Image 1 (tube, rainbow, N blue to C red):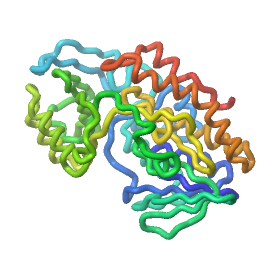
Image 2 (cartoon, one colour):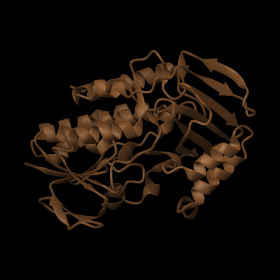
Image 3 (cartoon, rainbow, N blue to C red):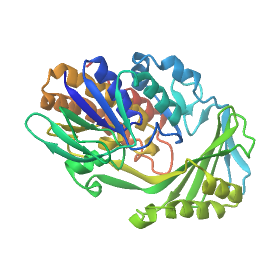
Length: 369
């Protein structure tokens, strides 16, 4: 039985763990956080990714916790409505679509609970070194003892540690898209009832949607910026930058700034894509955002993670121990799909991709090829 270490306990890693276990692999998932991470924006499961979720036996559960928006309003900088729709929402697309929008934390928890009995999870730890030899990879951890694995998969996101250790520094692969996104929770001080609001004021803007039976808000705040200095990204400096930008808004700036300052699940990072010539090196391979992040601007990061997990596990199972052949087949299958989905974030900067492009990108993959 081959042993596989997956770095990253978000969506991609546990989804891969599910499929690898089904194929007879012994799987360990290491995650830096002390438990499945809460917070995050609403994510979309679209097209062929819905088939993956159905094959995992999670489709009905995902439908039960999906968001149920009635529509959205577009506001001017003073907060006056200038347009509205009861047919679509910027966060999810058409409201009558079969696609599913749900909170990231709900999907993370769902896949974790579905795999925890069959997969070893190491929470509160992380990979610090990889030493490959002819028979496997020796992995050093920040806290646990070193261990050997047949294969290592980096599913640890945009700032992947596995990618850095195996392929080199992040700046070689990250392509900044000119903006940052912050996501955080707040009480529903706007009294929104299954209704989103969107506002743009100069080079900043936000979308706000109610969640948890309209008891909370999930705020997605974006601002244009060149790449920020590393010292600004650390500590509380980035949060303070977001707070200051929110405070300057003409509509609800004070309350949004207070919410960002106090949010326990505050998040902010660059809108960027990861573009690489290859997603494997020796016994190490990359999955999801670690290898081909499309950025949240595409709306397809979660779907790419789910489809990539299914494809990688299938390729490894068919290769009967030949990881080089498996990784090569995984790349051949996934690259056209990744290219289409990454293009969604760049074909129309500053606005949603065309409906035709989204429809093509989300379905342009066969799980059984």
